[in-house]
Image (cartoon, rainbow over all chains, first blue to last red; front, top):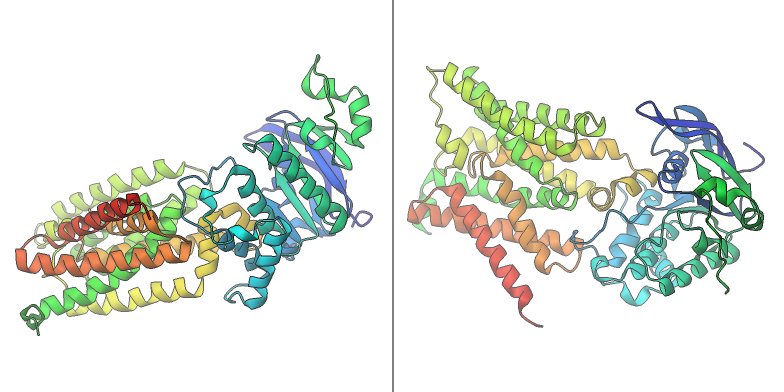
Length: 250
Length: 267
């Protein structure tokens, strides 16, 4: 284990059909961190997240979760994952909010075990945390983008994870809901001590809240505090010349 | 007692029909939620090749159909997971090749009598006692598996990737789902016929989705619509002398239209 890191990425290279997507990435995520992974589209952010979750395997290098190689990792309830919402759930099956959040308890309950009263209480608690308890019987498809995102957070929260990984969580969510959403994440990080990893192509929206930033465009261009990033020359490296960073006041 | 039940073949048709009326929409729910419902049609066409093979080898055609459908189901799943072919290409390919093999094999087996028409469109008179011994236990097996793994299969249907990250054995569960789909297709072959099985797995589900206010309730509605379609279809087929498979599917279509209309009525 690398200094108690929650996730440790060691010399990871990933190629897809001979084309390198990520090369020689080294990254430690320490407990309590709120890491923003930013970079242009196609820079390998989602790929890195999937490597961290063991959904794909690195071509070279290794990933450890809580000190265990990702391939041997068993305690998946310690990890909450909020996938990219690009696969729109519109026109999908009618799942209720409570049903979706309860999915988050399945890994914890184990195969062939029924969900119990305790699990149902955990579902209500998670929905309360994201202020969606009143919608527990609503269909997920009938909610707004911002509300849906809160439900997916509750689904990740309900297994009481130590770390949550979110992939572009506010795509298609209106600006006010985005702000509320990132406040919620900050609160979970500060008050519940949950380590957070948020992937975003839009630096502006996350720079106010995160404690560290990793810029990714096939290689790890920088990893440090957001202030370092804003004042440094990394923006140019990452997105090309002429892009200015504007920090929204809060 | 209704005179319809004095006929042994009708009693057998109802026993087989109720089994598939339960099982087909149930599996259909998981397939539709995964946007994978077309696999039912592919497996049905492939199973026709199994029917011909069974006849050629002088074994029960349903056993032949089961063997071929299971193999094809696992091959398709393997191609999908390995990204060797995209899902839809693999499905389209096996759909037509299944039928092609069936036709060629039937042509080769000139001495063997196969009522191809009944396997394509279903028939109420063809369910034998031996068929029931295949259909009912296998139907029970499908129900038992879904009962045991209901919440895992539901999670898989909702989001495969998240289910994987939560530690579920998704490869096993996906394989199990296509195997169950293959078994269901074979169970339905006699009554509904290979060309119409897909409809029985999808239309009651589409009808149930119109007014279902949760996943579990949608499944209940789908099964209710499936059972109603099969039972009403068998009665109609008997008294009106129409093809069983077609009648069943038309009734499920009627239920779908009623469901859509019901949804439009303001509460």
